[in-house]
Length: 279
Image (cartoon, rainbow, N blue to C red; front, top):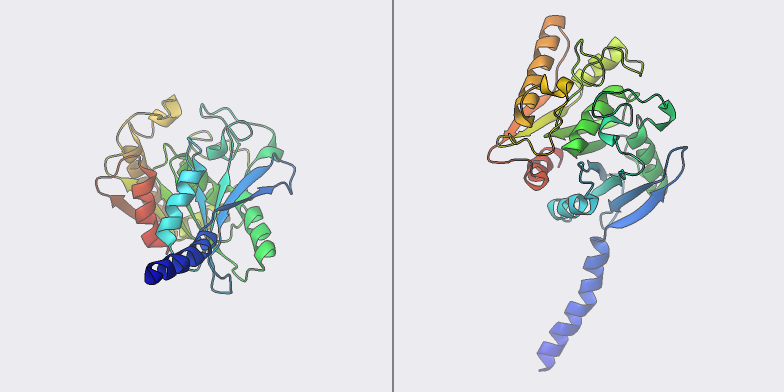
């Protein structure tokens, strides 16, 4: 009996430490002229100059808790700070387009609401909050989060990106002649040739589920349908267009292309594959 009681006491004593180590916390970011954003985050046991930072961008369902809790399990006891911004539907309906346009392609003229450089702003906030040494961060976005991520990398001013995984976006901004947001013609943000070259030379991975061929929640606007009939087809067409563009113009191209066999529009399976890349 004494042995059992001793074991229970040790277990109870250890449990709060584990809970503290893996607790997902929240902070409200209000240091800008846009609506507040709740930042969900999980710190490692110790933050030091080796700590990696990974941003996780949710999909259209905005189930940010599910996303970061799954990544907590993937990271385990690694020295990683996870950060997941929550872009609410009320304040950021078109977050996947960085608030620059609607899903039907209508340009939004209020540039003060654009989410370009938002992640780098959050990054600076956490660097100050935890006195981080890191100069770069990684980012994973799935579905609408994948839309956000690839547009963020393209349209932001020199983002401090180490690696990015763009998973199962519903549609894309092609580097071609279609009107924005389907292409870069008449884009409301200044986009130089140097910015495009930088975008193409980043260490990005386009990650597609082989079975992501359904139509549920798919953007069926005419501009999006020209990109393909489903997410898997659109992703293939997008990557092929980048390969063709860089080949014709002799631009360094450092992207990777990977297929997750048997995965549909499932952020968990895609996160599992992304973690192997980012960690």
